[in-house]
Length: 386
Image (cartoon, rainbow, N blue to C red):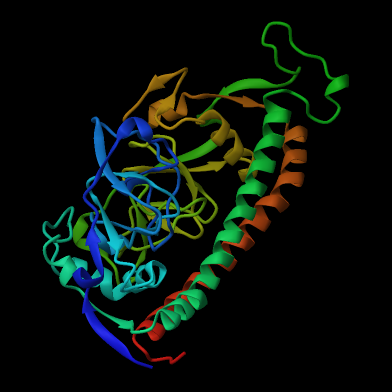
């Protein structure tokens, strides 16, 4: 098989065209904030772009976050849209390279290491846009070979995407059940339940401060000298950068323990975007941008969907007040419905198996990602011939 070495600039150019911001929405606007670390793609955006125009991208472009390249945020565009200035848009030259093949070449750790090697800044390193196009990569001379390799790798991504679709459907089912029971009050045997005239709640239900329902741990950041990427100590998170669709993924570790989130704790962002939720898949350290929440009766499924319902819009809490950050006191004073234990327990009985299925699908996706990370460089560096 014949391959040839190119510099990135020979097979892709920076896209520099602009798009009007009034054409963008949460689904087609990409910023570093809604790109998922560890090559996890993107989620819907929380913030609209400012100004009249912003950078544009087209279907089959490759978007890479240029802030803290070690987070490995990359996305193969499936639609047209716009993005922030800290997102680099590569427009593949299709007469030289299959766009999807180039996407997998740039998904290698080697590319992100190269970006970091020329990065400017220490606290918030950014890749050097003049140096990035000089990145060297091998490309098969025939499109047939490029397509074959991309097809092998995309099979893994297709399975991961299918798992994500199933997870979203399961989450939607659980959230709908929560709303039916605890918002519309159509829980089992509601027809035979008396309602309090004054509060409008079923008799025996109460409004309680969040602090009465949960154990709340506010994060505290250790000194940065204890951070590392060598997996020394525990995983460390201090904001939403490591957030996935449901579970955080790790890229930074810390050798000094401050505040801990235990496995299964709900992670709540206390800085913009305030109210974004994820789950700790294992014990980890939380910095000042996060808090960890655990239900006092260990009813984590109920607590998760209650919080999702209460903080339905990021940065909007407490009767419509907008926050750029919240304190422990702000959180503890949030008023939440406390149903009878027997109703919550029945909800847990129904929903916990759904959440366990979501966990299994997530674990399967993690295993697929690990297998892909092993296969990817071997195919791209010709260790494995196809």
